[in-house]
Image (cartoon, rainbow, N blue to C red; front, side, top):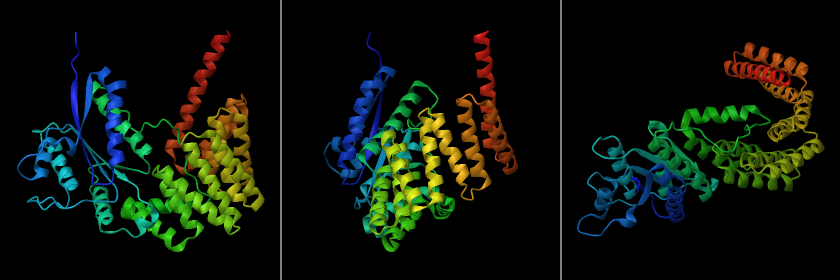
Length: 411
């Protein structure tokens, strides 16, 4: 007996210049149908202006009628906004009109619209610093989404990154069709913390973002890179891009930073750029390249006499080797970072002790594991860091359960 499929119509809206993303969109829907959706009783159909039949009247109105029959809406913007469509409402582009129609459908029970997803393709720092009229309109729209906080959006820097983000949304829609709980924040690659030799940089970026939003923050950071051309500006913008998971853009920026620092004989900053590249490789799952870059950065930090930077790279290497199930190597890196002690604050020292404690436990040294975890817990208690305290409590409980199970098996 033939099984019944629920067909979901997914509308894609883009201005010109995003043909490759439109193709990726169609390809991903097609491949997901074959590998997962149909087996779960659903099917995703790509809908766009290409399939709208010709006829009398305003072309955009006919596209809108197709849109109103859709279940899902995906908007992608880059550096173009488009041109007015002649609508009575005064929309400044067909893409804007499609977006507003999709929102109206989403907020009405009279239409099947279930979700609206917005993507922005990143532009380079020079264009962010000096955008033309079309890009400026796109950025203003992005800022309006940040201010309204009604819809989340994502920014990508490569077609592959767009494909990865779109797959997560399509997988979520499929799970929702099946009645499964949506797995938010799923990420196949366990990411390494974005660290900075100057922790104030991260706090500063977060403060700016909270005050003026991501879009204006990026414009400010990009402008600093273009005008100041100093290493600190490169690093701050790179941290922003890494936090946004725009890894391709971040790699390109840090390579520029390395080349400039290396050409001027600035070894500390050149080694920082290599360390940042190693951290990005780690986030991308390119472990061997990450290990090579970080070891290179460590050697350069030692050569430059940059003990503060050296300690940070030791932490990165500790995190990487811990994930590789090499607790002895990771422990050596963590303890070395602690011994260098570049005026770490209490929270960072507690974090290092906590990481070292887990390595000791993996190596069967429960005496030192308990001592360091107790010291970390006491510090977190003084700092009122309840999340960190809970993490240690859960770890202790898990270790007790594992020890009981081991003793029961040996008995």
